[in-house]
Length: 268
Image (tube, rainbow, N blue to C red):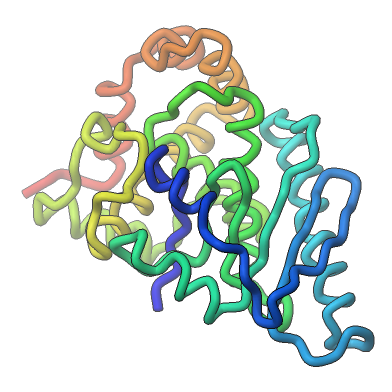
């Protein structure tokens, strides 16, 4: 099943927030750290021990705290209030939320980070937690600002990759984008500036996430992480995408997009 994490639209967020929080045994264990409040009800038999629920909860919070500190260093976001995170038993998550999306989702942010859990910490779970933290941090920095989906998701995908040491698009990802461009399947960033990708089907969403990640990776690679950080904070202050792009990158969205696409090679 393809893992796609989603920052949902306001309507979907409201519905998700009202979903019954019923876990595998009907009770969510609560544990806190410096910056997070974790609720989890993954179906783990033992409480203590190497594979017990306490070890799992500690591991989740360690992942989140590491991501929190790295997010502050790389993009300068440091939410002041504790962020709530709910890790569901996989069956419960699927039953409660699978019908809310047109594609398989492993997590989403709706004022609370909600994640499809597992019985142990693995790379997939870590990446989802890192991804959703970006959405939570942007919401904390600008609660009423609706970020264009390409930027919102592109930043989350970019940060998720950076947290595991991946700085650039892989050869496989580049080839996927090249083929999509050659086949005329890439859409403009203006089209990807809707509040979310929730209306897209699985294939279109997968490509939209990759294209958004590619655009943010392009900005960071060509202009540096510091400029990307400056751009994000200028956008939060100005609430005007075009103005912030002009101030920081001395360009507009269309021109930057053209440069990004030119790196993928000419379209036949």
